[in-house]
Image 1 (tube, rainbow, N blue to C red):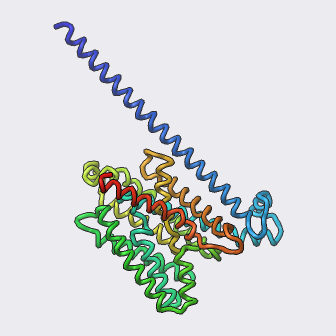
Image 2: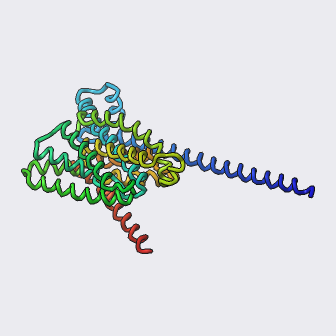
Image 3: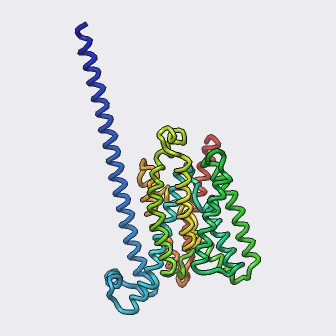
Length: 362
């Protein structure tokens, strides 16, 4: 009988040691994940800076990077200042801002709805912006900042309509995606109807905007987008605190005391607004929101939504795509959306093929 307390004490000590080992293992895994997340973020940021410098230096007037830096710091001659500061810098900054907004928006949509197809350009958000903007431009001759505001209003209205149509005592990701695809198809039909009823030259200009283009963009598009992102990014960071409970499911989130539907609505509102302001600035640049988040999650596996990495990936993707759009073909500037679609469309087909194999038991 005297051995019983000693055995119990040894068992308790062994349990404590196993618990301590488990805690150390979890801490080590989290530390490795955090280090990788920071390294990937730093690498994406460094790549973004390099491509940004290249985009400011290449063109009809090629400049060495030293002259570009000198011009950015206030030096250089009048010609270099005009080319860098008035032509190339606003376009490059706009590419970064648009890509970051689309990348962050896509990451939020896909994480909240837990569906890889949940992207604003696939579930009707961008289609809503396009429908209202094209209608305003072609039927009411709206232009400039008012046209951008109409695109933003269209995306918000489409997002609200999709959410309400998908509501059934809550919103399920699969149902919202299906409703969004249907709404998007209906809105796209409105776009093509309005274009068919318009003059050929006006319809051609609208088509160029619908492709997603940074051609001819200037500081007048940069400042409104920068202001909007200055408001939306902090709101998205605050709303993202609900992401971790939501990823566990509504029941688990409710068990943890989180208000799942309120958190989901706030996140979807922020993501919709992000897609809307990006579309207002550059048109519906296709597939950026769709592919940026999966790339980011591959780079930092196990880190959940990887929102900062998704934003940086989207920015880098649009900046590289715009560089290719400007210089891939001699004397031709393609819309940036054409290049991003060449990247995103094969990924969509691959994703659908994988889903078909899984659905068929293969």
